[in-house]
Image (tube, rainbow, N blue to C red; front, side):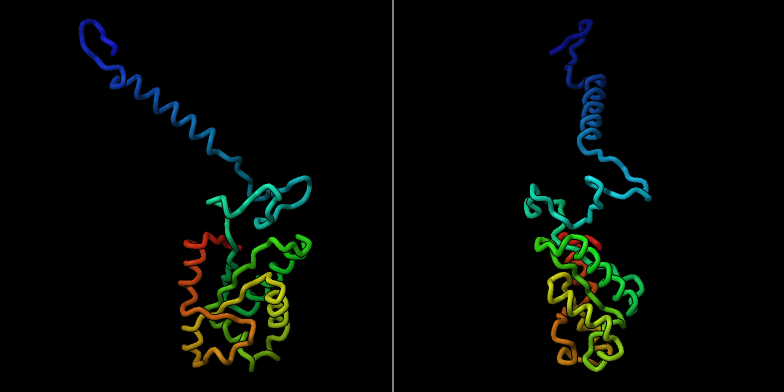
Amino acid sequence: MLYCSGERRHLTRSPLYLSSFFLFALFFSINTFAQPALDSGDELTQQGQPITPWVYSADENPQMSPSYPHGFLALLNQQSPDDVEQALLRAEQLFLQNNASANIPPIALVIHGPEVAIFFRENYAQYKTIVDLAARLSALHVVDLTVCETRMGVLGRNKSELLPFVNTVPFGPAEEQRLLEEKRYRHF
């Protein structure tokens, strides 16, 4: 204990000690957890090659890292056939850029808007290009395509009308939330 001019004061209760402690803690946390910020135009590169957010290095074990994503979820903003096609083309491009690497997890596409109709057997001729691309990427385990049963019900359809490579979930938005929160997926 430290005593000053006849008063009994404990060192750990002095304002100087507490402010020094908080400054040290702040400095430590900033240096430990700070990461360089990227300008919106910067591209992440490693040895001159673009880094995609889903390529594992040989030294990483994604299952051991709590912050590493365990998969990716395609973000469909327009809920249109074009939006689905663009997401599939992007998945194919990333797959080809990574030399068809087997350690890439499939990208989840959860479709719960009017674009569910793309994957009904009777609409194959109309959406042949999109369906063929989706089937090929699904067979290669590049994408995991899922449609919403609730939307199918709204459209008056059942599972038997879907193409064979398409999976279903009871409610699409809840599945997206589950993948993001429980499975730690990130948007693709």
